[in-house]
Image 1 (spheres, helix red, strand yellow):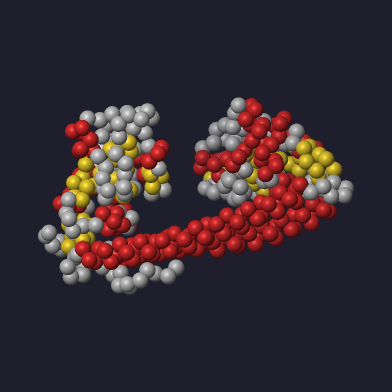
Image 2 (image 1 turned 120 degrees about the vertical axis):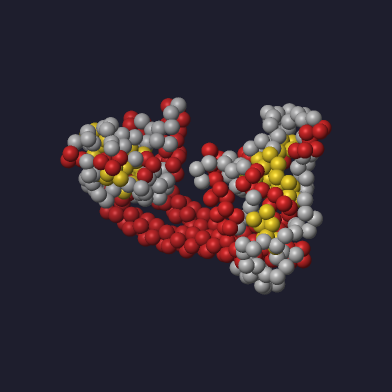
Length: 408
């Protein structure tokens, strides 16, 4: 192997062009068949979250000579070469009789002193992704090709050092994955706890609670206006895409002028709750705190004064019971939206106005605590991802000194 001169690496490490240490091969072109006929036919869509369920992979017809060229063997690494997954890799381990499809590229190691596991870990580093992103900038469909992959410069340490690095990375990543799974479960638990409490509150049937329909407690008083008129040009516009599902938070807001709006919009203000009628399972609800415009696919609901508190209405529209009702209505209509008549027919029990205020205070307090927990767990997950990147970067620059996996 020839010593490269572009990077400063420990003694004994070398820089090699990938095409010099491995064969880089395009996949086989054919139609997949779900009849058991021929070898398995691995496609981009079969690689999910770094793994493959071979039982769900279809088959293909292929000649014996082509099979030898395109077959997948233990230690091969395949790459998605187009679309959103461009550059993602998968290390083949103990495959069945299988070949790979044309939208994949296979790297077959030809240098005997190179561990497939070591090379696969390299393909997870920021260095690799920076090279790939630079290589695909402006490329058709965001793809990259075998030539670009072959020209990648790869740091290769002696085989004993590769074994040491792979052992440390495997152990460290297992610890990180366990810690991340725990954080994600804690995050899920925090959300489910609040949702369970919310549902329990609205399922209560306390003394003095009265059965109502949504039409009894709120109305749509806004009329469609022309956003091209000068008095509305600087109003912020809210579309369904600006509302985060289940959270009620707003993102990427622009004015009517900035969006160059031309079709009719609803005018809303601080007294209203916005409910997106599109795809009700997304639970897009906003407790308004300013005046603006909203899409005609959003209902600006005005609570009837003294009957229902705006904040109570907001929480009601986020309950599982209401969401299930809205989803059922959209399914019956054959369209992913809720019509006004069906919306206002929703039935529920409503406590007194003073009890509503008490419930809202309790829910707001619990919501604030839940958000604090969510922030803690999200930060933990972020830190674990950053730790993984840091360990990878050290491993492939010769700086991974410890003999033991990092303690997470």
